[in-house]
Image (spheres, helix red, strand yellow):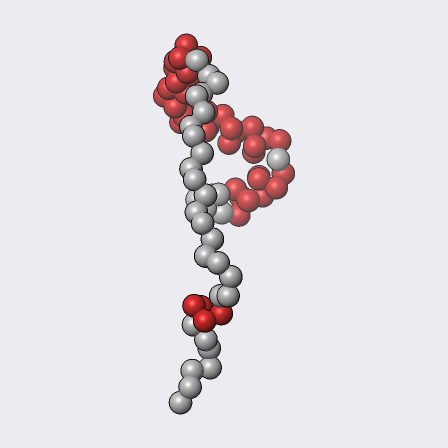
Length: 78
């Protein structure tokens, strides 16, 4: 019995594509001082993540009726 589907090798008729060379890495546009400031700010935000989350949820419940309804319907899931 013959196979109903041809192998991929039998279908391809053109040349095999050549892989593209990797592009060279471009130096970062941000300098070391700016990167230190960014890391310091990120650490401060991460340290207060529970507080930020609580404030965000409070604002959402106050200003977004759809969020209030979702929390009322499924507080644990939301």
